[in-house]
Length: 327
Image 1: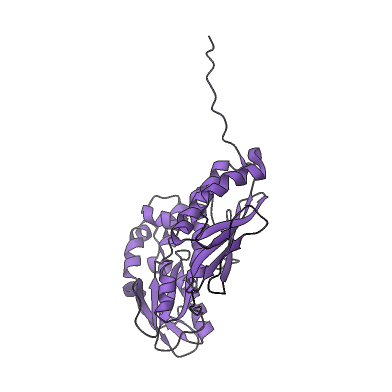
Image 2: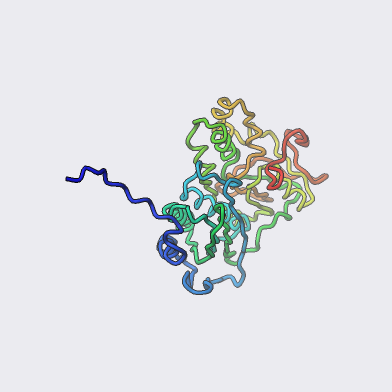
């Protein structure tokens, strides 16, 4: 009689499968997309452009710079990679149509992590009808996810950063400060409101609000990825105006309430999270007329030296937000 304890087979790694077999595991997990004429499998994909133009943007996630493997599983990283790219297309007033994903992974990475990454991409792209139509795969010392996204304007003019005019209302769709609070909880190794940590790991941008804003006559718009102050400042400089954010504790009361417990727990200033915390991927827009459903008014555009005002004053004592080379 054999009394030896049976061993559990080790989970396969990327190196165990190799490129072709790994891709064969990934492709069935990815949505085709309603505009895809030819998907993965050839040297390039073919995607319809009904408008005759396409919106394009690209972004990258780097392990230990934008995410940590001990904080986020593959599905969360996939959702995050999709979210930040889809939000850029929505901020132009367009509907996302397709994504191309390039992936660098160590050979020791479990195949299951890569499969979960694909599922995370599908979680956000599938519901909006966008396909993941191809990309590239390479080996490296750390995980890098690079995404290029395309979108369709459906006959609309793109909404730029440079169209805000004095008298316009400043409005926000989505949230601010919550992703920053979630990051702070993880960095401190503390439990807190699960919603905040989840929003850091997997942002939920208000994608439908982008085309809705364009249809409502938005004069300027962008994705709030680097903090409200920094991104509002980008509209201000591009448009040659002042963005007056008024009284953040009142205009952003819902966000303030959502992060209050975490701020008390960590001894942090919750208003700083609201003004400088990035990666919620809400949409900041200006309107010369009625603000569409899904947006809330948080300020007004004024004439003057281009910049941002908070409580009527330049926020010089506050860090302006995330900078990729200074943090």
